[in-house]
Image 1 (cartoon, rainbow, N blue to C red):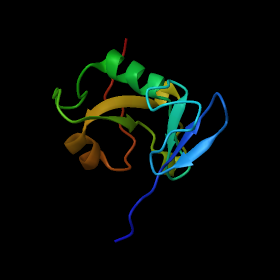
Image 2: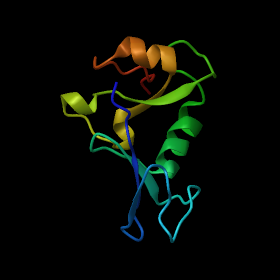
Image 3: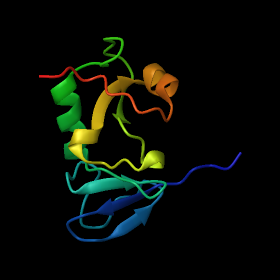
Image 4: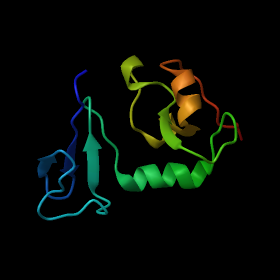
Amino acid sequence: MKKLSYEWFCEKTGKCSVFKMPCEDCDRSCPNLIRVSFGMGMTRMLREKIFSRDKLCLKCGSKDKLTIDHIRPISRGGSNDESNLQTLCRDCNVEKGNMIIDYRKNG
């Protein structure tokens, strides 16, 4: 099984580092730092904004093992735009797979 590697990319300085090592000008708590894997990434600030907005898994209500889910998956043309993101627990995210399902309440 191939081990995945990630790059940490600072949007502010434009510098990268591989294997979770932060760029020399930042640390992992830097809000400008994004994790890049499979060509996608999102800022820590955006992740925290989505978690703060949703507060729990929007499918089952769990507050454990929360993840950010793409309503329209990247593999189906989705983006990291806030309007395409929702909070799901790990189990619900895995169950959803690459289906397009919006669990957010309207209104």
